[in-house]
Amino acid sequence: MEKRKSAVKGSTLKWIAVVTMLIDHIAAVVFAHMMTTSMLDGSYYDVWVRVYYVMRGIGRLAFPIFCYLLVEGIRYTSNALRYGTRLFMFALLSEIPFNYAIYGTYLEKGKAHNVFFTLFLGFVAVELIKWIRQFVRANSISWLLVVILVAALFMLAAEGLDTDYGAYGILTIVLLYYLQQSWYGQRKGLAFLLAIVPLMISDTLEMTAVLDTYLIHKYDGTRGKQMKYFFYLFYPLHLLILGLIVHYI
Image (tube, rainbow, N blue to C red; front, side):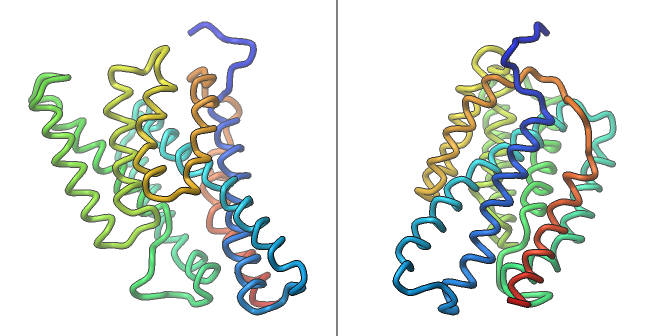
């Protein structure tokens, strides 16, 4: 693949996703706590509200990038079982920090589960579609029906388990896989944009995710400098730290 001077590597996408996610969670955890407990100066409350929504809007860039990188990982992994197991283990590892940061408890029944569960379900859905694809003609009506049925099944599962981003997250992951089978080349930016439409419909703040399209268009398909477990560990660790900050302020 020919390198472009302004190309974006996979590691760059990860850093952008991590930083924007951190900004989002600082607002969702720390700012939200300070706003609901009247810790902020009332005369500037409206300003803090605007800052809160700006930070949440910036944070909307993170999840679509993580979904894209998940699909990329599925395309290139040499061991799907190990990849899926890693996602599931970090989903379990992240649940207590997630609940502690978002809800102030260790285990919260009836509330949303962390985003690793969504990514794991999306991974299983795509792997199932890939397996079934061996028995049907690619880009046929039959394969499209398979994609729709599998997506619907796992969207229901995500809603039943109440995972972060729920059905919209699963649909985005499946669409990314389906569209990029035919459009991975010069139109990968357009494929990405179409895939994140469900997210943008689900929440007006998600409209900022359209900015990711430029990054995906510039993505050169290379991994860049790898810090694999750092990115996995960052999710539960930063939630734990934010939870502790809220607990002690």
